[in-house]
Length: 398
Image (cartoon, rainbow, N blue to C red; front, side):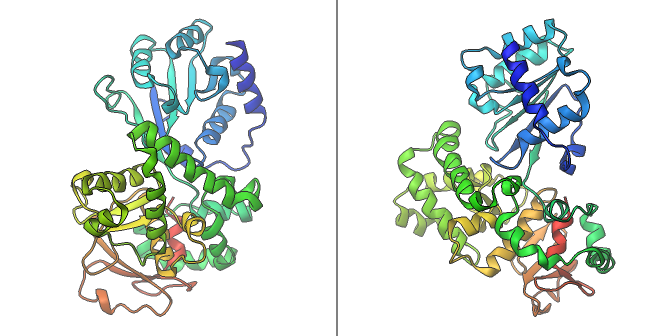
Protein backbone atom coordinates (compact mmCIF):
# COMPACT_ATOMS: atom_id res chain seq x y z
CA UNK A 1 0.00 0.00 0.00
CA UNK A 2 2.99 2.31 0.51
CA UNK A 3 3.43 2.68 -3.26
CA UNK A 4 -0.20 3.82 -3.62
CA UNK A 5 0.26 6.45 -0.87
CA UNK A 6 3.39 7.72 -2.57
CA UNK A 7 1.61 8.12 -5.92
CA UNK A 8 -1.31 9.83 -4.18
CA UNK A 9 0.93 12.34 -2.40
CA UNK A 10 2.71 13.22 -5.65
CA UNK A 11 -0.64 13.84 -7.36
CA UNK A 12 -1.83 16.04 -4.50
CA UNK A 13 1.40 18.06 -4.64
CA UNK A 14 0.91 18.74 -8.36
CA UNK A 15 -2.80 19.61 -8.11
CA UNK A 16 -3.68 23.29 -8.37
CA UNK A 17 -6.63 24.75 -6.46
CA UNK A 18 -6.50 28.23 -8.03
CA UNK A 19 -9.73 27.44 -9.89
CA UNK A 20 -12.21 24.94 -8.46
CA UNK A 21 -15.44 24.03 -10.22
CA UNK A 22 -18.59 25.18 -8.39
CA UNK A 23 -19.89 21.62 -8.88
CA UNK A 24 -17.78 20.73 -5.83
CA UNK A 25 -20.33 22.57 -3.66
CA UNK A 26 -23.26 20.56 -5.07
CA UNK A 27 -21.96 17.29 -3.63
CA UNK A 28 -22.94 16.07 -0.18
CA UNK A 29 -19.46 15.00 0.88
CA UNK A 30 -20.79 13.70 4.21
CA UNK A 31 -22.46 10.73 2.53
CA UNK A 32 -20.79 7.35 3.06
CA UNK A 33 -20.84 6.37 -0.62
CA UNK A 34 -20.68 8.93 -3.43
CA UNK A 35 -20.53 8.31 -7.16
CA UNK A 36 -19.51 10.89 -9.78
CA UNK A 37 -20.33 9.97 -13.35
CA UNK A 38 -19.30 11.88 -16.43
CA UNK A 39 -17.84 11.72 -19.90
CA UNK A 40 -14.11 11.46 -20.38
CA UNK A 41 -12.23 14.73 -20.08
CA UNK A 42 -14.78 16.77 -18.07
CA UNK A 43 -12.53 16.97 -14.99
CA UNK A 44 -13.68 14.26 -12.56
CA UNK A 45 -10.15 13.31 -11.47
CA UNK A 46 -9.12 16.92 -10.93
CA UNK A 47 -12.22 17.54 -8.82
CA UNK A 48 -11.40 14.58 -6.54
CA UNK A 49 -7.80 15.65 -6.06
CA UNK A 50 -8.76 19.27 -5.43
CA UNK A 51 -11.28 18.26 -2.78
CA UNK A 52 -8.70 16.06 -1.08
CA UNK A 53 -6.05 18.78 -1.16
CA UNK A 54 -8.46 21.36 0.25
CA UNK A 55 -9.74 19.13 3.07
CA UNK A 56 -7.05 16.59 3.95
CA UNK A 57 -3.74 18.40 3.50
CA UNK A 58 -3.05 18.20 7.24
CA UNK A 59 -4.05 14.53 7.58
CA UNK A 60 -3.16 12.87 4.29
CA UNK A 61 -2.66 9.51 6.03
CA UNK A 62 -6.43 9.32 6.63
CA UNK A 63 -7.22 9.61 2.90
CA UNK A 64 -6.16 7.72 -0.20
CA UNK A 65 -6.67 8.24 -3.94
CA UNK A 66 -6.36 5.26 -6.28
CA UNK A 67 -7.01 5.07 -10.00
CA UNK A 68 -8.30 1.58 -10.79
CA UNK A 69 -6.95 1.68 -14.34
CA UNK A 70 -3.42 2.28 -13.01
CA UNK A 71 -0.69 -0.32 -13.47
CA UNK A 72 -0.05 0.06 -9.73
CA UNK A 73 -3.46 -1.46 -9.01
CA UNK A 74 -3.03 -4.46 -11.29
CA UNK A 75 -3.58 -7.77 -9.45
CA UNK A 76 -4.91 -5.98 -6.36
CA UNK A 77 -8.26 -6.59 -4.73
CA UNK A 78 -10.54 -3.68 -3.85
CA UNK A 79 -11.95 -5.21 -0.67
CA UNK A 80 -8.45 -6.12 0.54
CA UNK A 81 -7.31 -2.56 -0.14
CA UNK A 82 -10.20 -1.15 1.91
CA UNK A 83 -9.47 -3.59 4.74
CA UNK A 84 -5.77 -2.67 4.91
CA UNK A 85 -6.58 1.03 4.65
CA UNK A 86 -9.08 0.96 7.52
CA UNK A 87 -6.67 -1.01 9.71
CA UNK A 88 -4.10 1.75 9.18
CA UNK A 89 -6.59 4.40 10.33
CA UNK A 90 -7.90 5.36 6.90
CA UNK A 91 -11.26 7.13 6.72
CA UNK A 92 -11.64 8.51 3.19
CA UNK A 93 -11.10 6.35 0.11
CA UNK A 94 -11.31 7.92 -3.36
CA UNK A 95 -11.52 5.51 -6.30
CA UNK A 96 -11.11 6.79 -9.86
CA UNK A 97 -12.22 4.99 -13.04
CA UNK A 98 -14.07 2.18 -11.22
CA UNK A 99 -15.57 0.88 -14.46
CA UNK A 100 -12.10 -0.44 -15.32
CA UNK A 101 -12.34 -2.87 -12.39
CA UNK A 102 -14.35 -5.98 -13.24
CA UNK A 103 -16.24 -6.56 -9.98
CA UNK A 104 -16.45 -2.97 -8.76
CA UNK A 105 -20.19 -2.86 -7.91
CA UNK A 106 -20.24 -6.01 -5.79
CA UNK A 107 -17.05 -5.11 -3.95
CA UNK A 108 -18.20 -1.53 -3.26
CA UNK A 109 -21.40 -2.99 -1.80
CA UNK A 110 -19.32 -5.27 0.45
CA UNK A 111 -17.11 -2.36 1.53
CA UNK A 112 -20.15 -0.21 2.31
CA UNK A 113 -21.75 -2.97 4.39
CA UNK A 114 -18.59 -4.17 6.20
CA UNK A 115 -16.74 -0.90 6.90
CA UNK A 116 -19.27 1.65 8.20
CA UNK A 117 -16.45 3.93 9.42
CA UNK A 118 -15.11 4.36 5.85
CA UNK A 119 -16.34 6.99 3.38
CA UNK A 120 -15.89 6.10 -0.29
CA UNK A 121 -16.07 8.36 -3.34
CA UNK A 122 -15.85 6.79 -6.79
CA UNK A 123 -15.85 8.09 -10.35
CA UNK A 124 -16.67 6.35 -13.59
CA UNK A 125 -17.93 6.56 -17.13
CA UNK A 126 -21.31 8.08 -17.96
CA UNK A 127 -22.28 4.50 -18.76
CA UNK A 128 -21.73 3.39 -15.18
CA UNK A 129 -24.70 1.36 -13.93
CA UNK A 130 -25.37 1.78 -10.22
CA UNK A 131 -28.27 -0.64 -10.28
CA UNK A 132 -27.59 -4.17 -11.45
CA UNK A 133 -28.76 -7.64 -10.58
CA UNK A 134 -25.76 -8.60 -8.45
CA UNK A 135 -25.12 -5.46 -6.43
CA UNK A 136 -27.76 -2.80 -5.99
CA UNK A 137 -25.88 0.37 -5.04
CA UNK A 138 -28.82 2.67 -5.83
CA UNK A 139 -30.03 2.58 -2.21
CA UNK A 140 -26.54 3.12 -0.85
CA UNK A 141 -24.83 5.61 -3.16
CA UNK A 142 -25.50 9.28 -3.87
CA UNK A 143 -24.70 9.62 -7.58
CA UNK A 144 -23.92 12.90 -9.34
CA UNK A 145 -23.40 13.68 -13.02
CA UNK A 146 -20.58 16.02 -14.00
CA UNK A 147 -20.49 18.11 -17.17
CA UNK A 148 -17.70 20.08 -18.84
CA UNK A 149 -17.16 23.78 -18.25
CA UNK A 150 -20.11 26.14 -18.53
CA UNK A 151 -19.55 29.42 -20.37
CA UNK A 152 -19.56 31.11 -16.94
CA UNK A 153 -16.76 28.86 -15.67
CA UNK A 154 -14.79 29.38 -18.88
CA UNK A 155 -15.03 33.16 -18.37
CA UNK A 156 -13.75 32.83 -14.81
CA UNK A 157 -10.73 30.89 -16.09
CA UNK A 158 -10.08 33.38 -18.89
CA UNK A 159 -10.67 36.65 -17.02
CA UNK A 160 -10.18 35.86 -13.34
CA UNK A 161 -13.52 37.55 -12.62
CA UNK A 162 -15.90 35.51 -10.46
CA UNK A 163 -19.42 35.38 -11.88
CA UNK A 164 -22.31 33.97 -9.86
CA UNK A 165 -24.50 31.10 -11.06
CA UNK A 166 -28.04 31.99 -12.09
CA UNK A 167 -31.21 29.98 -11.64
CA UNK A 168 -33.34 29.70 -14.77
CA UNK A 169 -36.06 31.73 -13.08
CA UNK A 170 -33.60 34.52 -12.24
CA UNK A 171 -32.36 34.57 -15.80
CA UNK A 172 -35.85 34.74 -17.35
CA UNK A 173 -37.09 37.43 -14.99
CA UNK A 174 -34.00 39.62 -14.66
CA UNK A 175 -32.00 38.95 -17.84
CA UNK A 176 -31.61 42.64 -18.76
CA UNK A 177 -30.16 43.70 -15.41
CA UNK A 178 -27.92 40.61 -15.26
CA UNK A 179 -26.65 41.17 -18.82
CA UNK A 180 -25.97 44.83 -17.97
CA UNK A 181 -23.93 43.80 -14.93
CA UNK A 182 -21.87 41.24 -16.87
CA UNK A 183 -21.31 43.54 -19.86
CA UNK A 184 -19.99 46.11 -17.40
CA UNK A 185 -17.21 43.67 -16.47
CA UNK A 186 -16.39 41.97 -19.79
CA UNK A 187 -17.38 41.75 -23.44
CA UNK A 188 -18.97 38.27 -23.74
CA UNK A 189 -18.48 38.05 -27.50
CA UNK A 190 -14.74 38.43 -27.03
CA UNK A 191 -14.84 34.90 -25.58
CA UNK A 192 -18.04 33.20 -26.78
CA UNK A 193 -16.84 31.89 -30.15
CA UNK A 194 -13.64 30.49 -28.62
CA UNK A 195 -15.67 28.74 -25.92
CA UNK A 196 -17.92 27.12 -28.53
CA UNK A 197 -14.88 25.82 -30.39
CA UNK A 198 -12.40 24.96 -27.62
CA UNK A 199 -13.68 25.75 -24.14
CA UNK A 200 -15.92 22.98 -22.85
CA UNK A 201 -13.26 20.53 -21.67
CA UNK A 202 -11.03 21.88 -18.86
CA UNK A 203 -7.85 20.53 -20.46
CA UNK A 204 -8.07 23.29 -23.11
CA UNK A 205 -5.70 25.30 -20.89
CA UNK A 206 -2.94 22.71 -20.92
CA UNK A 207 -1.95 22.52 -24.59
CA UNK A 208 -4.35 24.64 -26.68
CA UNK A 209 -2.60 23.71 -29.93
CA UNK A 210 -3.30 20.00 -29.30
CA UNK A 211 -6.91 20.42 -28.16
CA UNK A 212 -8.54 19.04 -31.30
CA UNK A 213 -6.24 16.01 -31.40
CA UNK A 214 -6.83 15.28 -27.72
CA UNK A 215 -10.59 15.55 -28.10
CA UNK A 216 -10.48 13.21 -31.10
CA UNK A 217 -8.62 10.70 -28.92
CA UNK A 218 -11.27 11.00 -26.20
CA UNK A 219 -14.08 10.40 -28.72
CA UNK A 220 -12.25 7.34 -30.05
CA UNK A 221 -11.68 5.93 -26.55
CA UNK A 222 -15.35 6.38 -25.68
CA UNK A 223 -16.45 4.64 -28.87
CA UNK A 224 -13.76 1.98 -29.18
CA UNK A 225 -13.21 1.09 -25.51
CA UNK A 226 -16.12 2.17 -23.30
CA UNK A 227 -19.01 1.23 -25.61
CA UNK A 228 -17.69 -2.30 -26.33
CA UNK A 229 -16.65 -2.80 -22.68
CA UNK A 230 -19.79 -1.50 -20.98
CA UNK A 231 -22.49 -1.97 -23.62
CA UNK A 232 -21.18 -4.83 -25.74
CA UNK A 233 -21.16 -2.81 -28.97
CA UNK A 234 -19.52 -4.75 -31.81
CA UNK A 235 -16.20 -3.10 -32.75
CA UNK A 236 -17.08 -3.75 -36.38
CA UNK A 237 -19.90 -1.18 -36.16
CA UNK A 238 -17.88 1.61 -34.54
CA UNK A 239 -16.97 3.23 -37.86
CA UNK A 240 -20.68 3.44 -38.67
CA UNK A 241 -21.36 5.06 -35.31
CA UNK A 242 -18.70 7.67 -36.17
CA UNK A 243 -20.46 8.31 -39.48
CA UNK A 244 -23.69 8.83 -37.57
CA UNK A 245 -22.03 11.40 -35.29
CA UNK A 246 -20.76 13.34 -38.32
CA UNK A 247 -24.26 13.35 -39.85
CA UNK A 248 -25.71 14.70 -36.58
CA UNK A 249 -23.06 17.43 -36.48
CA UNK A 250 -23.83 18.66 -39.99
CA UNK A 251 -27.63 18.68 -39.63
CA UNK A 252 -29.93 21.61 -38.80
CA UNK A 253 -30.62 19.89 -36.35
CA UNK A 254 -30.76 16.13 -36.87
CA UNK A 255 -34.28 14.69 -36.99
CA UNK A 256 -33.78 10.93 -37.28
CA UNK A 257 -35.68 8.78 -39.73
CA UNK A 258 -34.81 5.45 -38.12
CA UNK A 259 -35.98 3.29 -41.04
CA UNK A 260 -33.92 5.22 -43.60
CA UNK A 261 -30.90 5.36 -41.31
CA UNK A 262 -31.15 1.65 -40.62
CA UNK A 263 -31.12 0.84 -44.33
CA UNK A 264 -28.36 3.35 -45.11
CA UNK A 265 -26.04 2.13 -42.35
CA UNK A 266 -26.79 -1.57 -42.74
CA UNK A 267 -27.91 -1.92 -39.10
CA UNK A 268 -31.26 -3.36 -38.08
CA UNK A 269 -33.74 -0.96 -36.48
CA UNK A 270 -33.52 -2.37 -32.93
CA UNK A 271 -29.71 -2.19 -32.93
CA UNK A 272 -29.77 1.35 -34.28
CA UNK A 273 -32.22 2.44 -31.57
CA UNK A 274 -29.87 0.97 -28.96
CA UNK A 275 -26.91 2.85 -30.47
CA UNK A 276 -28.83 6.15 -30.41
CA UNK A 277 -29.55 5.54 -26.73
CA UNK A 278 -25.95 4.55 -25.94
CA UNK A 279 -24.53 7.69 -27.57
CA UNK A 280 -26.64 9.83 -25.23
CA UNK A 281 -25.69 7.68 -22.23
CA UNK A 282 -21.98 7.99 -22.91
CA UNK A 283 -22.16 11.77 -23.24
CA UNK A 284 -21.71 12.22 -26.98
CA UNK A 285 -25.27 13.26 -27.86
CA UNK A 286 -28.38 14.86 -26.39
CA UNK A 287 -31.64 13.19 -27.45
CA UNK A 288 -34.94 15.05 -27.31
CA UNK A 289 -38.16 13.05 -26.91
CA UNK A 290 -41.80 14.03 -27.19
CA UNK A 291 -42.55 12.44 -23.83
CA UNK A 292 -40.04 13.90 -21.38
CA UNK A 293 -40.76 11.38 -18.64
CA UNK A 294 -41.19 8.28 -20.76
CA UNK A 295 -38.74 5.41 -21.14
CA UNK A 296 -36.20 6.79 -23.61
CA UNK A 297 -35.08 3.28 -24.58
CA UNK A 298 -38.53 2.63 -26.04
CA UNK A 299 -38.92 5.99 -27.80
CA UNK A 300 -37.46 7.22 -31.07
CA UNK A 301 -35.64 10.52 -30.47
CA UNK A 302 -37.42 13.43 -32.15
CA UNK A 303 -34.20 15.44 -32.39
CA UNK A 304 -30.56 14.61 -31.74
CA UNK A 305 -27.75 17.05 -30.95
CA UNK A 306 -24.11 16.47 -30.17
CA UNK A 307 -23.51 16.84 -26.42
CA UNK A 308 -21.54 20.08 -26.82
CA UNK A 309 -20.46 22.45 -29.57
CA UNK A 310 -16.75 21.56 -29.27
CA UNK A 311 -17.57 18.10 -30.62
CA UNK A 312 -19.10 19.67 -33.73
CA UNK A 313 -15.89 21.51 -34.59
CA UNK A 314 -13.91 18.29 -34.22
CA UNK A 315 -16.26 15.97 -36.13
CA UNK A 316 -17.10 18.35 -39.01
CA UNK A 317 -15.27 21.64 -38.60
CA UNK A 318 -15.97 22.94 -42.10
CA UNK A 319 -19.62 21.82 -42.21
CA UNK A 320 -20.85 22.67 -38.70
CA UNK A 321 -24.21 24.39 -39.06
CA UNK A 322 -24.60 27.75 -37.26
CA UNK A 323 -28.19 27.12 -36.21
CA UNK A 324 -27.25 23.69 -34.90
CA UNK A 325 -24.32 25.16 -32.95
CA UNK A 326 -26.67 27.62 -31.24
CA UNK A 327 -29.21 24.96 -30.32
CA UNK A 328 -26.47 22.58 -29.17
CA UNK A 329 -25.05 25.23 -26.81
CA UNK A 330 -28.51 25.95 -25.38
CA UNK A 331 -29.33 22.27 -24.87
CA UNK A 332 -25.95 21.56 -23.28
CA UNK A 333 -26.09 24.41 -20.77
CA UNK A 334 -29.67 23.64 -19.66
CA UNK A 335 -29.57 19.85 -19.50
CA UNK A 336 -27.31 20.00 -16.43
CA UNK A 337 -30.21 20.87 -14.12
CA UNK A 338 -33.30 20.92 -16.31
CA UNK A 339 -35.48 18.55 -18.29
CA UNK A 340 -35.52 19.13 -22.04
CA UNK A 341 -38.08 17.69 -24.41
CA UNK A 342 -39.30 18.09 -27.96
CA UNK A 343 -41.82 20.84 -28.78
CA UNK A 344 -44.09 20.80 -31.83
CA UNK A 345 -43.84 24.58 -32.33
CA UNK A 346 -40.70 25.87 -30.61
CA UNK A 347 -37.17 24.41 -30.54
CA UNK A 348 -37.25 23.29 -26.90
CA UNK A 349 -39.72 22.60 -24.10
CA UNK A 350 -38.00 22.95 -20.71
CA UNK A 351 -39.29 21.47 -17.43
CA UNK A 352 -42.65 21.01 -19.20
CA UNK A 353 -43.21 24.73 -18.54
CA UNK A 354 -41.11 27.00 -20.75
CA UNK A 355 -40.90 27.14 -24.56
CA UNK A 356 -37.76 28.44 -26.28
CA UNK A 357 -37.10 29.34 -29.89
CA UNK A 358 -33.42 29.76 -30.79
CA UNK A 359 -32.08 32.00 -33.56
CA UNK A 360 -29.96 34.96 -34.64
CA UNK A 361 -30.34 38.59 -33.63
CA UNK A 362 -33.16 39.15 -36.14
CA UNK A 363 -35.24 36.22 -34.84
CA UNK A 364 -38.85 37.30 -34.31
CA UNK A 365 -41.39 35.95 -31.85
CA UNK A 366 -44.01 35.19 -34.48
CA UNK A 367 -43.58 31.42 -34.19
CA UNK A 368 -44.28 31.36 -30.44
CA UNK A 369 -46.65 34.31 -30.04
CA UNK A 370 -49.59 32.11 -29.02
CA UNK A 371 -47.62 30.07 -26.44
CA UNK A 372 -47.49 30.70 -22.69
CA UNK A 373 -44.11 31.14 -21.00
CA UNK A 374 -42.41 31.41 -24.38
CA UNK A 375 -39.06 33.09 -25.07
CA UNK A 376 -36.84 34.00 -28.01
CA UNK A 377 -33.17 33.18 -27.43
CA UNK A 378 -31.01 35.23 -29.78
CA UNK A 379 -27.37 34.95 -30.70
CA UNK A 380 -25.26 38.03 -31.54
CA UNK A 381 -26.99 40.37 -29.06
CA UNK A 382 -25.48 41.71 -25.84
CA UNK A 383 -28.80 42.67 -24.22
CA UNK A 384 -32.33 41.36 -24.47
CA UNK A 385 -35.74 42.96 -24.14
CA UNK A 386 -38.94 41.54 -22.63
CA UNK A 387 -39.09 37.88 -23.76
CA UNK A 388 -36.02 38.12 -26.02
CA UNK A 389 -32.86 36.94 -24.23
CA UNK A 390 -29.19 36.72 -25.32
CA UNK A 391 -28.05 33.17 -26.05
CA UNK A 392 -24.70 33.54 -24.25
CA UNK A 393 -26.47 34.36 -20.97
CA UNK A 394 -27.74 30.76 -20.72
CA UNK A 395 -24.12 29.81 -20.11
CA UNK A 396 -24.44 31.13 -16.53
CA UNK A 397 -26.80 28.43 -15.25
CA UNK A 398 -24.11 26.24 -13.68
